[in-house]
Length: 495
Image (cartoon, rainbow, N blue to C red; front, side, top):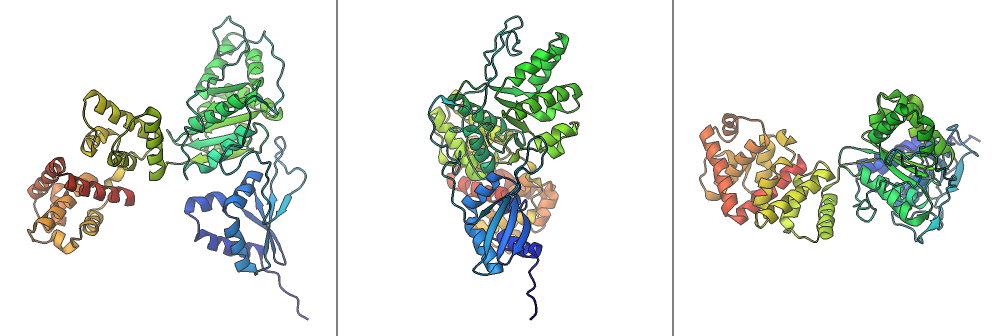
C-alpha cells in the first residue's frame, strides 16, 4: 500500500500567507505575519513559531478567525494550529525551558496585565514587583544642585504626557499596546527593553513618558527616571571631571524604571556607551524596566557598540509611523477639547489633510491658527487657514503630473478630458480648465509655457490669467472655494 506523502510545511505556510495577504493591509501583514516561522506539520496540525507571548496574544485577539479559516482551506476541516513561542533569556539570549506550545483556539488569559489596549483596573499605591535598594544619602544625585546630597529622585516626567492624552491609531497601535503592558507590569513582561522608534514628532517621547506617569501614579516606592541621551552624556562628563564616576553609576543603578530618550545620540561616544552598558546590564539583570526611544531601529544605529545593540534587541522593538488622516483629525479634536476651543469642521479637515508630516507640526499648525484668530480678531475659515498654514504644508507634491491633475478635475467636475484641452468657451468648461491650470502651476515643476501646451497649445498669459481668476474666485465665492478645496484633497490623498 503506497505511503501518504506529507505536504511540505514551508509550502503550506507560503500558501497560507498568500491568502492572508489578500485580507489584511500591507503594514499589518509585515508586522504580524512576516515574522512567523512554520516549524512542523503533523497530519493536520500546523505548528508555527512566534517571537513573543505578546505576539501570540495579539494574533489570538485580532487574527484567530482569519488564521483558522486559512489553514482549514489548505489542510481541511480538521486542521488545527499550534504556536511555539520563543522565550529568550536576557543574559544568554537562548531559549529557556524549551518551546511553549498552545493549541488554537486558546482561551484568553483573564489575568493578563493588559487587554485590548485598555488598562486593567488598578488601585492607587499598589506595590511594585521590583525590589528597591536601600537608599544611600552619600550618593550624589546628578539632577540636583552640586553640594546638595539627596536621593529623592524627581522622575523628570512631563505630567501632561499620559495615555489619556495619547491618541491611538493604526500608526501606533502596537507601540501603545506594548506600552500599556509595560505600564501595568514594569520589568515583568518580555518587553524589556521596550524600544520605540520613529521619525521626529511622531509621539515617541509622549508614549515613553506615559508609561512612566502611569507607573508613578499606580505603584508605591518605585523610582522612575526620564532622561535624554544628551543629559545623560553631560552628567557623565561632569562625573568624570569631579572624580565621581562610581557615584554616577550607583545613582542610575538605583532606578526601577529608566526611560532614555533619543539613544541614537550615544553614537561615537565610546566612554558614555561603556557606562550605559554597565547601567543597562545591572538594571536588566535586576528585573528593572528599561524604555528607550530612537529615530531608527537598533539594527540601523551607527557608531554604537555591538554589545549595546544586541541588548537593545532583547525585548520588543516597535515603530511609530506617520498618523493617517483619521488619526490626525482625532489628535486635533482632542487638543481643541482639552483647550476648550472650537474651529469650523472644514478648517480642521483642511489642517488634518495637508499638515501630514508629524504630530508636532500638526499641533503647531493648530496653535498658529488659534493665535491668528485670537490676536487679529478674525474668524478662522479655510481661506485664512490656507494663508496661515502655508509654511506647514508639505510641498513635496511637485511630482504630480499634469495629466493626473486633468483626470482628477475631470472626474470631480464631470468635464471630459477632451473638453478640458478643447476650444469650448462654456462657463463650466472654462472654470474646470482654469482650476486644472491652477493646480498644474501649484503642484508641478512645469513652466507656464509647458502648462499651456498641455491644455490645447495655449500661451503662458492664459495660464497666468487662469491662476489669478481661480485665486480671486476662491476669495469671493464660498461654493467655488469648496470645490477647489475638495479637488485639492483628492490630489494630495492620491499622489
